Image (cartoon, rainbow, N blue to C red):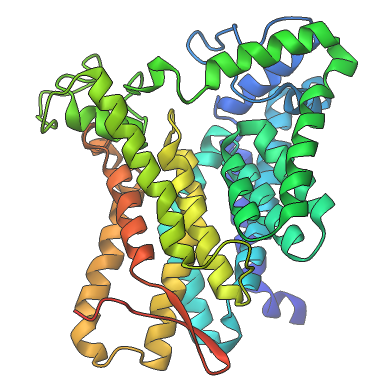
Length: 424
């Protein structure tokens, strides 16, 4: 009985998560596509030419398809239960990693509880979309966080392998490699690239070298972010990224098959001009990393909050700069959300504002605005067509970019805190 009283909240949350997994596993989600692609791969099919459920491609690597093949022997429901259960466990590991990297030891139990509740509430909808659809982003974020942590702990082979898994699965974590080079983690960067190459050729041992080569070429033709079809990235109304955002903002009737009659464009440029603008904005977001780092190359950060701050920005812009992103892909924003919640919780705890009361309403407004923009589809689903039409989720992500850029960490004495760069 003492155990139950002591751990009642943990047990309660565990039961809720178990129920959620068992319920959501009934949903026909993307993991069923993964399983079908896994079976087709072993049949010698070209899994990148097949359209599953009539409309959807399999975009991930052949190695992952081989990895989940044992699950194809189970009924789809129970295979999905295992996948969703794994995602819940990986979420817990992600949360542990975030708490380890933030200096939360200065927080009181009450402040820590506030930090946990606010972070989870703001990120909940993005997390739930991954569970609801049986998607991949939780797995990818875990590989990135754990891989970067291992590299930082002088375990470049383990960290490089984990990053390589992520790069092979969905290419996007590749943006971490230049950061590793810039921050003088040469062994980690090299091992990530070497392991990526090895993972890409491993399926040849099962399906043959010729078939594996064909699949690699077919997959690249499908996912290459510079493909012309990814310029005006409006094939589905639920797409959210810089490519989609700028397409609907700068081109009249972009995505006309899905749009409503409400106006949303402020210009009507050519496809060539649109492509140029998209790539300029992408470049600005990438170069923003240098603004966040503010350090000469080949110097490692010595403060763990600074490390987390830099990584949070990179994770945040990953789903923005790559095309073909759905809501679930923006779970990469979790570290940035955690950092900003930490920043304001810490500011309140140490009274970092000169006049806390004068800033209170601004902080509440910012929190409510971010919460709504990231969770509107979950809270008021009947208006989802309106939100998708105006790409409110992308506005929320860009707003997070601005907040992150204006709230830098600093070291004060022996206690790491966050600096408030805007005094208004």
